[in-house]
Length: 558
Image (cartoon, rainbow, N blue to C red):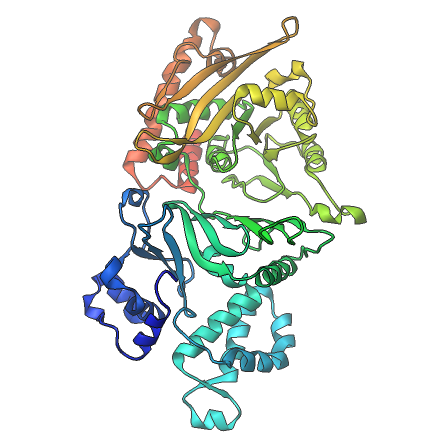
């Protein structure tokens, strides 16, 4: 904690100067129902930092706070987060508040665990979705709150606070991911990083980089935790196999490096959180990632089966954008998604979701890679194939799919169109240069610095692949949209000059050559439709936007 632990002793002794009626109403209501939160608040050095504000839900507008001192809830009703200000550092503190924070269990854990051994078979055989309830009931049977008769029956006497802490701790450690639980139930976290012994670090959606109060004091503690975590996710780490890439039960990605011989600061791990919330195109417009015209342009292109790569560096928002764009795929399309980690979300009912099988089982002949899944997908007659990320030889199969009329959308690691082409035509992907123009659009997504100094995610350019000249050994492409760094707006150099809209989309829509520029009127019509839906409100979510577009298709309005 960034304040003395002895503050909690003063709270237990009734010496805290803070009264419940001094809290602002929203925080007072929550603290009155959560004793552990109230005890934590009493231990805070209020004279130094002030009383924290309480936000039931965070908004991106909070990024502008000069002093961050606030508390918010997570998806677990017994876990809250305090963003604690640190004026001496670039990073503020990230402090999980749960039933364990101000309580001392004084050997109760060992007693309860010893009794639970007798019930291990019952808990272990319970269906996974019921295991938490079975474990909680078992603890309630083992313990008693101030009941002399129950004590005579051998139950362990505990206070109400201790019982709450025991139930939370046992569920957290026996069924969950231990001390990482508060971080995994926080919907505002993007990345969790343990770089060795010491504090863990958080990448927050609103407050960016933060330092956590969770830390590992020694190499042995960290090594033990990493080994336990590997066993929990059924991907054990050893000195012989010290590096593991895996998926947590909630869908988050984890990379583990074990041992001090290859990691000098000690074992380390990084978790990229899985987000259950799927942002819609209208959400991205609201955040400034694109504008209505770019969205309408991509709508037209995707609806007419153009092949699209969303390109950018790590953590630039590629998967978020690809997910949002799936609402523009024709509502009656059959879609196959292929991923190594399940992150893609599709609103269409006819959706086949395929995931790479753990390649650690390859030695036993049980591994199924992306290349094999993509080959199988071509036999399933999909209208659209979505690939989580193209990295290797599966890229060649993706271009074969494009040539045979299957629409392909994928994410790809690169920083420019030139780098995309270099990677595609080089090892190990090896797409023939003459096939590159099967790719219609390259959308470059990046985390950039906005004029106000904040880091934001933007569609920095939308590029149309035109063709390949074998004589000059050169590729030609044109930029349809471009982000302006100086004022955080978007230019449309492709206005009345778009190769893709005039030569591909207009032709597919049956417009004769003399009337192909009418496609720009359709583009602006769709931009106006998106703006109208957005301003009406209530239809901005991923699923609702898809239902509106599907209904418009059904009625022949678009």
